[in-house]
Image: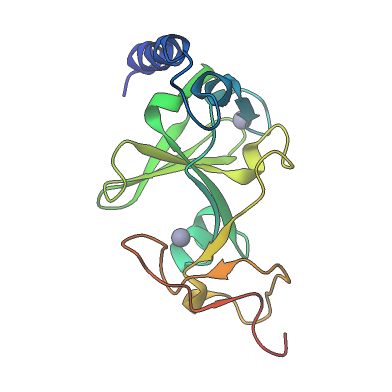
Length: 180
Ligand SMILES: [Zn+2]
Ligand SMILES: [Zn+2]
């Protein structure tokens, strides 16, 4: 999507949030949720982004493809809708790691930035390490734990999914492997 379209989408979302008010609104105010702004950047800051509101999910992925994309034991993602998201500065380069899968990175410093897959239209999955404040959105689950590296374990009590949490999938377990 060209940058100007993204900016237009972001301002449309802001306009919608501004008009969503009134005594009929129940639960957390949409205006308030949209007012949450999260920023992130690559290591050299050639690329900066922001998204408004809450992410759809925050997950660790243990699959081999993600492991190779970030050259680390695990990749942690923040899933946001494209209409929440815009670049503030620069735009990343793209590598198509498999058909329909785009991986975004900074062409200057090499930082992995994001993932977009045809299986998740209208979403961008940002790498957690790019967040300005990593404490802002803690992870909520683990995906593809069947591909998790043997020597790697995290002692959180989050649900672990064999693949993803989509289509009503049930977690394999919650918390670390027994004996880990
Ligand atoms: Zn950079
Ligand atoms: Zn993965």
